[in-house]
Amino acid sequence: RPSMRMFRDSVVFFTKNLPGINITSIGGYHIREGGATREQELGFSLAIGIAYLQEGVNAGVDIDAFAPKFTFNGFGGSMQFFKEIAFQRAVRRMWAKIVKERFGAKKEDSIKIRCPLTAHIGYSSTTKQRALNNLSRSVVGGIASVLSGGPVMVVPPYDEPLGLGWSLEARQLAEDAMRILMCETGLCDVLDPLAGSYYIESLTNKIEDAGWRELAKVEDMG
Image (cartoon, rainbow, N blue to C red; front, side):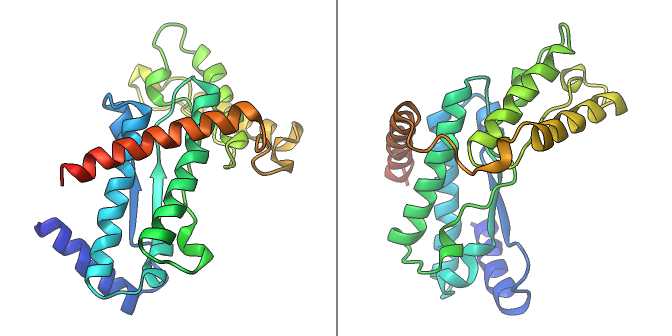
């Protein structure tokens, strides 16, 4: 309760005195890495977002004045290429529906989900054995990030699981791979290029439905 009171007071203060600041950054990445399923992460993350939005509304702040200042710093990932792309599309639709229909937002910026890290492989997908293979995994994640409607993110560097801190070589290779995908493949020429695909649309619907069920469970528990 003291933490939520502090958050409520922060929403009021920032909206009034520092309207350009990002108020909070919500994330579900750690939830998935901690063992939650893809659908659980979706439901839990959005439940957190709803609780924060409600605090601002309860404090008498107009939803359109502070919702655009929320970000999601990232969700979990895996090597399941198409499911991670569908997850990102599902969470965008769910957040937009929540902010618009439940909280009555009218501005387009309010219903956008701002997230710098979209589809990726998840750091737990990397291995200590033949660590260089992690670069191939990260490139797969980078392709997924673009196809899910986000920026190119080739993460993590291949030596992530070695626990030594990222080496200069690993960081350079990851950044070079990102530039290759951005500048040499044409992947960034179109946003959400898989929209309309029967498989992607049906998978997005399936993950979204499961996410709503998980969210309902959390809300039923209070």
